Amino acid sequence: MFQAFEWYVPADQKHWQRLFSALPRWQSIGISSIWIPPGCKATSPHDNGYGIYDLYDLGEFHQKGSRPTKWGGKEDLLQMLARAEQLGIGVYWDTILNHKASADHTERCMAVKVDPDDRMKEIASPEEIEAWIGFDFPERGNRYSAQKYHWYHFNGTDYNSLDHSSAIYRLEGKKWSEFVDKEHKNYDYLMFSNLDHTHPDVKEDIKRWGEWLGHELKLKGLRLDGNNSGLVIDVFDLVTNWAAVKHYSDRFQLEFIEHLERTVGSEWFFVAEVWLSYIHMFQILEYGF
Image 1 (cartoon, helix red, strand yellow):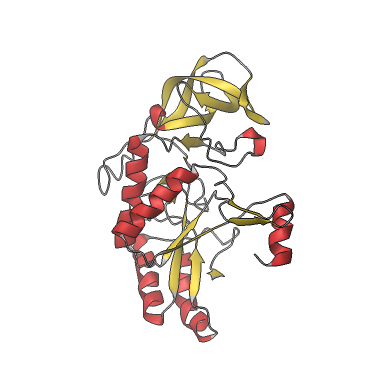
Image 2: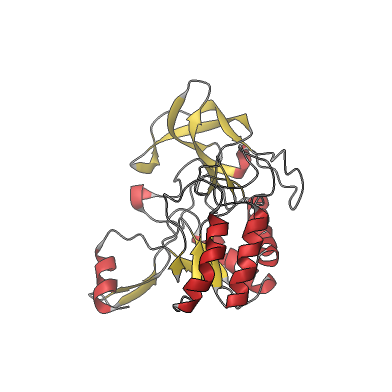
């Protein structure tokens, strides 16, 4: 799999066009699959897509400063994917399911500050905050999905407009997922407005999006961002286990993948990054597991 982008690609909204032109050359030298960037609408036309705003806007609606994403418009994306299919090159979509960014409006809710180094430790009393956490997608409206997002669809955020303070806030009545990496005691919260993957609305909207994406675009699978899932062999204890997803529930990830296998097809392939800072990483590299 060839990574068909990098962080400092020019923000000229022409990257899908560049890939369209490059595909025949890549096919001639044996490249059979490519990983493309997250092409959903993000915080601005310069955002690489990881500050994700709207999953359902693939460069089709004038939101967050432009109609195209940094990478280009939807029409260019579809042309590039059609050429990749003609050339027998599989395409894997970079998928951001952990958070949302650049909300449309603020909402007030109760929250508590937690220690950045120990997310399970509260460091203040609960307080009312005003958070940028309301998502209406006004330019897209109800096209493709009628789901809107409010404070109760999230479990954490990082800014209080009432006193202009930045901190990690856990929202009232919410818990961090226990099925995540244990860095900082719990690494459910990464950035922006952190989605609550136990909320039925969130789960159904993301699963519906994955199904929609699979029918909307000619893809071979997904690359899952914010993920630490992989097979780990401890050669000293001879224990085989699965590392947790880094920043969102591995239980939900399994539910999401199983839904896509039923609705899009079992031939889809899923790949994820592995961020391991401890000895298991060296064991994997040394012993080839």
